[in-house]
Length: 112
Length: 113
Image (cartoon, rainbow over all chains, first blue to last red; front, side, top):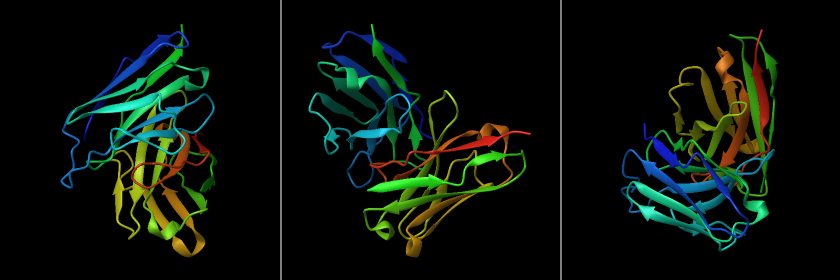
């Protein structure tokens, strides 16, 4: 199975700071159709996860442009510029390129 | 788009349970669907997937014990959980398509004697 390693496990920020989360895969996530099925989710306390980014860098409907996904192959990054209070929670990467799909372990974004 | 899970509860080890996910607001038959679970205080754990044509994929931890299915006429996704173990205790979420673009609110399954 593909292993997704997220770092850091937790991240303390000041509101207005930039935050960066890494997701490294044990295998390339580029599918044979040329797409890379790497997604990012945010789970706010007490809520279901919500999709932020799909296919590495595409923001889902309604997601603010301060969320930026990038990367290729095995290395991916989610950057949040100007962290706002509603951005706090746990972030997960997820790959749907290889079966079975797998999640990263999560990164908790909290206030310093 | 709305996904609503039901069927959770407290069940003894070795017993069975069937979860449902009622879908609305989209053409259910056109989409693959997933089940994902989250043990208390833990991260997300992918469980199973069923395609629009009813092909299935399972996580190794549940293969042979859980069965994902769908009824397109009822716009409903199912997860049959058999031979339950304490480590299956979790909130179970259904989610739509490969990108998991919409999630339900989740349903709690507790496996305990």
